[in-house]
Image (cartoon, rainbow, N blue to C red; front, side, top):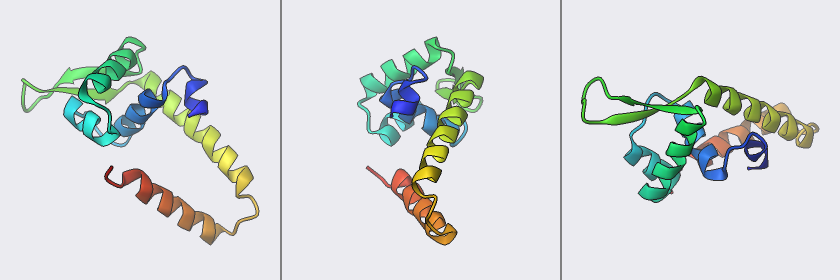
Length: 117
């Protein structure tokens, strides 16, 4: 996604950031499965996000053997900035579209984004 790449985040990194923005901590297995990235690739992507202070790892309070990845404050700022840019761009493209149609499009896009891969 060009808007995320302008923030210095790869396409794969953006997929992980979006996933982290939608909930609390996620395991590496969840990240790999949800983003359809091979486990080694998901690990490298998360390593880069952690090094860039966009995400952080924390031991699960319930199961101390499990490490969860969380969205960092800098990562949240990037997600919010990129989403605002995308919304402005989409608003320009859909400016003449009726509100009900835009709402339906948003519902369809959300369903597509959450569909199993």
